[in-house]
Length: 599
Image 1 (cartoon, rainbow, N blue to C red):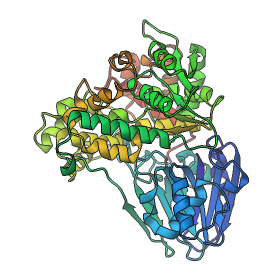
Image 2 (cartoon, one colour):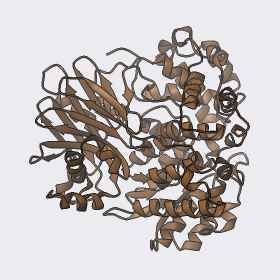
Image 3 (spheres, one colour):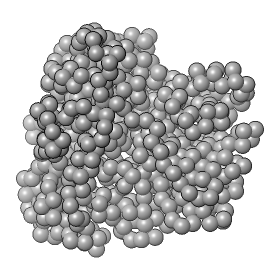
Image 4 (cartoon, rainbow, N blue to C red):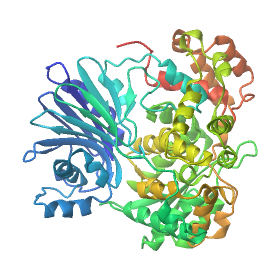
């Protein structure tokens, strides 16, 4: 896990090494162990390294293979790199390191662009061909690793984080009205390739971007899960599905043990993380380091779920760490968490993950985490109503009612005229996504959208940003692409059973105690942020009334005044605080020094 960046010139000039170095330096928390910059011809690469596999300097990046004429800078981990290395060795390739980085170079040389089909892992890479000058950018199937791009007539730059691109300068930082519309309606999710800034795009998950020698770029999608039933599984019983899910998850968990450093596990006490711990114990991880976080209770709202995580820690004999966070640490951490965000993320879980990662990084460099299970196995409350949607319009309407924050009138009441757009863009996006082939029912359509879009740009991005802020690698076995493919083909009624994630819960009974499975659905409790008051409300008020916010003019002053007068009075359908949504966007823009101007 690292931070990768680079520049490709389109105008015949040499790359700006100073800018590439600045972009790499901005990602120092992602890769605190070492740094490197490389340049040749029209391309320069920069890198910050977190040493996980092959801790020697032979695994340093940017990596150059002179024999093959290839260079690479990337971020991630290839879990099956040892198997690929053996296969490539049989083809005659010789290796100078023990890293997964070198395996990527050899695999690209041997199999070409579609080498990604053979990868099990999370990755965002840039591979450069010395002789042709061709550059290939790629992102893993579920978008676990981020990759941002900015482009003008003279050059293309890319980086593992959006703030890193800003550090290179020359970015159009005006607000994208389309992205703002999505942010305000689609529960703060901005679908790729857009970001909140006009001048920055993100490579979509499961995509390759080829920058050809003549400057042309081409983006292709190399993978998409199929949410249709399969004939070869038509006769499977419920037990067959449970066994298959458990077997696939077991493989996913074991894959993510590949490392030359110890691997721990985040343990919230919910079904998902508890099951991962149980499977790790089955795999022989005795004395596994596990970590749970808790906050001080506020206003009668419990701040921890240690009761359940303790059950699992005791059952499997883990080296368990209860991390208790005092209220005095919350406000400073909020500023740090916002600084770690590559894009504005309204979830209160961000500050919890930020603080948790800070403490966990003192003990281990790698952790497994349970994110993704709700989107893959239908754990959210809006999936069962989708079963009643027999038409496309009905499915969109049901999804919108549960997930959207507001309609076009609601947006118009908050956003100033300069930033309004024509039409209901988020509804059109959902309608187009639902209409694509490969999903048979309303539930299938919602799960496909959530697992390939919402999951990527909310929970998964949250895990990456907050763990990487402390040089911690987070691995998510529920997003193993083979497990996702299996779950996609599972009958939706098995997934929504037992109040959601039915097939997963039934499979989990073979591994973990029923008391954890049958508990009420949990979450990361952050009581101090549940309702805006005291210094948190002051922070939001100051951000929305700041000169930078008034000059930017995103929101109608009378709407801001109204929300501040009743800061906890307006909630979205998903129980999000409307005031926090506005305040967080301004806090993020101001934290990153974005004034909203063109380059």
